Image 1: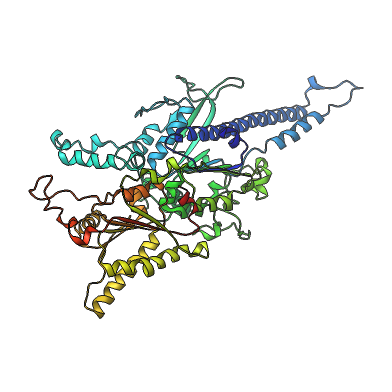
Image 2: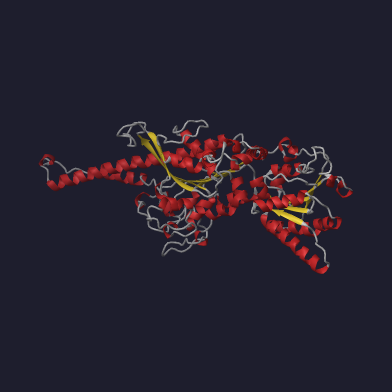
Length: 610
């Protein structure tokens, strides 16, 4: 039922993606995208051929009239030939030939990492019958796919054998390596699919893909030539094509933003180093030639996959693509054109002259600036979120309407079912909040003014504070630091002791903080949601848990709950049952039962439903 919905070209928001139906959803989306691209390219090829035939006929007729060929002389009483039929055919063809946009790119695909892009593109090539529909990863050349070997090397699974060839066989099978693999496996299959050893987790990439139908893919001298009319040719795919000569643009939001702002990346330097005779730009420099956004002016389909992962990276990069181009650095409106407050980077009016644009064949709605009304926006996520809904409502302006598909969460699939720690009191506390913009301040103020003072007064230890928002984390961290300075200056005490783990913490800082917390040297551990998403730390020594806002992903709530009462590993020379290593859990201060407190506002309806 999904393909007929997409075929209407209505904007679609899907928030029911799972590991079980992900392949089916991607195959359906790819089938719709390929159908649009191949149909458009075939239509252009057919019109190109007809235009050449008419031009050839006009030249022949003009040459005949100029030379005054006697063979075409008319009888004395005959009327001169009329060109009404030819003129009508030209007029009809002129209207039908409006089959293009300002640029060739028709589809924009946004994905979070190179590993996800590799899997997504493999499925696309499998649908085109250019790759086998299995898990094999061909390294060499693939018939019909240009630059596949380079793509496999840059986007495919890392070659650990090549990287570790200097190590001995005994070094690879050490206990440390086995323990590392065991720890990575415990992080779960969802984490392994994004950040495991077998995937490329780089989040900065961009690539153009050219798709050419009716191509002879056989061997010999005619390989790559176009088939004759009426024959069933194959499809040729060229990776790493120039943006203005590409049909599909596939990139990460970060990589596309760097391309728009003209910031040179490492891959750009490798591609242009030879052209610049070794005097290429350094990484981070701006390229004035690339500081334009015209390659996004004719997008028909915008597909945003793994939106839940993009939320954890930086959703602002996605929203930038739909913002006014006047607000983006290094992007200015064309000379003589006033700025528009409603125009977005995608489907904007061109800012520079493009030699590939044939204005006689540009569709009328592009010329009138109504391209966004005909653009299809497809967003796929594994969970509903207010930011996704806001972006969809604001920028899904297609004339065909909007469709939202979501799955209800039964009680048997809720996050509470995965909690394995027994006899823990779980309290969900509602916080009054007057507006959506104030919910962050309401949560932080309630924690600092209502929840934190009893913790300090009772000196409650082993308390993990889970903070989904990084800005809330910074506010709470700064407030606790200020309280420590005030207590030391005014009363000569240390104040509340705490440690921090965020997505920006260095490995040695994370190890040091985890050691202090598990050994009871600090009472509070501030832990961000993005740190748990990217690293899935399994913190030991957690006795109490506080959620300053509900987690974005439902499984994170169960992960936090299952950390309660986790004993640190035995140290020293004692055996497995040595009580001296865990004596800190047997004192009177630690005899209080484990607890969990979750703070939420009325705007956390999506999270509560999970």
